[in-house]
Length: 223
Image 1 (cartoon, helix red, strand yellow):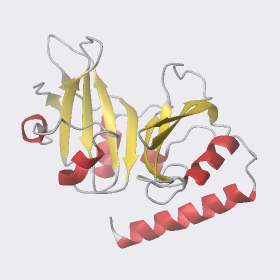
Image 2 (cartoon, helix red, strand yellow; image 1 turned 120 degrees about the horizontal axis):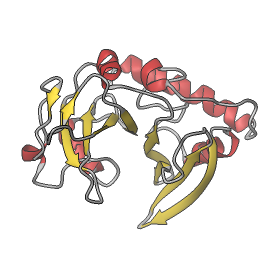
Image 3 (tube, rainbow, N blue to C red; image 1 turned 45 degrees about the horizontal axis):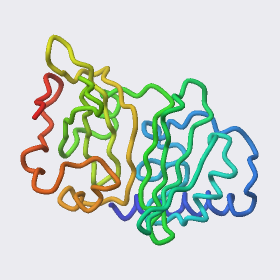
Image 4 (cartoon, rainbow, N blue to C red; image 1 turned 90 degrees about the vertical axis):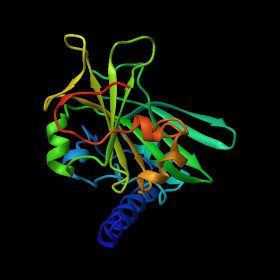
């Protein structure tokens, strides 16, 4: 991560967490978070002032307690790692979708956020450029949908697209929707395998065969 970007993230984290610690009660409605495209109040890997690798578990709990954006939430601890699952209060969000904050050794390690507004592939490419790699995987449960993960490891995020089949194949178009985003401490593509339990990434030994270069809009190679 560039030094200036790291400094800006640290400043946002300090300001937001200072306000949070001063009062863990909501002061105004948060509304829809559009930070993936606007960078307001902060851009990846920061989300709503929470920064993987910097924010503490206390920071995260404080955010969950004070934000009007957060509805039901609960804690799940397994094998020494903690996940704080929560649902958005915004209308239209499926009750089956939970956002998540991963906690490791008392520090926020990763986040997955379902988007509450319409984000299309062309907007992501316009802001961030082409991804380092992509991985097209089949959706679970026997669905014919394809899930396409775009890798921006140096920026600390992975947006995921949902692609419906058309005429027996899957195709990326400018209007393809991003449904959720994973945030993590910026790293290299080679090191993403270390986050495999927290972010979508091919299984060990399958990276070379599953990861694809960005080839622009068009048909996806489902392997």
